Each structure stands twice: as C-alpha cells, then as structure tokens.
Length: 87
Image (cartoon, rainbow, N blue to C red; front, side):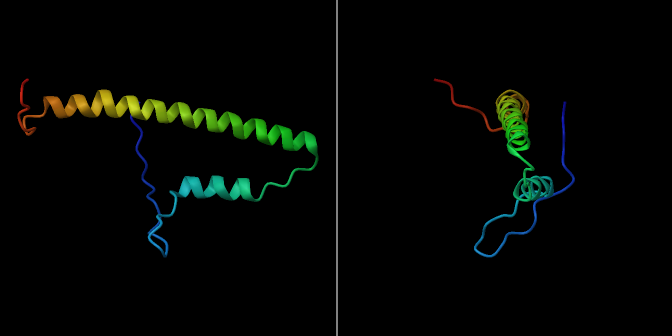
C-alpha cells in the first residue's frame, strides 16, 4: 500500500531544528498532557504507548523494505540511470 502525506513538516525552528509533522505534534501534545487518574490508568496508558512504539518500529522496517526493494528496483530499471561498472 502506498501512502502519502499531504501535511508537511512545519518550517525549521530557530537553531535549524525541523519541527515534526503535524500528526507527530498531535501525538506529542497528547502524551505531554496525559495525567493518569490512578495507577491502573497509567499502566493502561503505557501499554498503549508500548503497542504504538512497536507498531511504529514495524512500519520503519517496512519503509526500509520499500526503499531497498522498490526504490532501488526502480532506479535499476530507469533508462536515465548511469551505467554501472561491471567487475
């Protein structure tokens, strides 16, 4: 599945640090403002965050696969690619 984002990162902040994309800003705000009602709520929150981090890690693995297999494959097939030296 190909997914594109129409939202772009905010302009660079002072000091040259790029702001996160808008969807990350929402996530950051949600986490920063979380106040658990009790220990049970905190544990549930942390379990959900752990699931999210694991899902994100799996998505990064898939992104790597996309880059290696699809982007590299496209470059090899492109007639505009410079010839490669054979060994």
